[in-house]
Image (tube, rainbow, N blue to C red; front, top):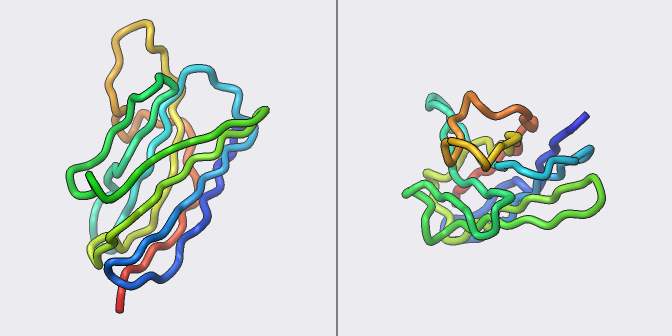
Amino acid sequence: QLQLVESGGGLVQPGGSMRLSCTASGFTLDEYAIGWFRQAPGKEREEVSCISSLEGMTYYANAVKGRFTVFKDASKNTMNLYLQMNRLKPEDTAIYYCAVKKMDYSGYYYYPPRQHEYDYWGQGTQVTVSS
């Protein structure tokens, strides 16, 4: 059973940096998309970034492009996903979630996957950007 656990959240000052981690245990997928989402108080959950099993295929929302970087590394049955967040702004304050979708890149697909298509979700980690 694939399980996702996020970590690395906390309080950071505007302009600061933070790295979030997402550990996916029981990870045996060959084709996948892994997304970072966030939900701020009173707002809908939005996708921030996505990374694919296809080399070099990433996605960033316009609000974070140039400030956030997604990357991953894998070991046997475990996938580690990271979100490096730089030049943080108060509007980046939210609960951040990672999610995994099994993909079939041999056929037609949406990229990044639509939010409701993701198969597995973590519990989230709070990021607060404030002075």
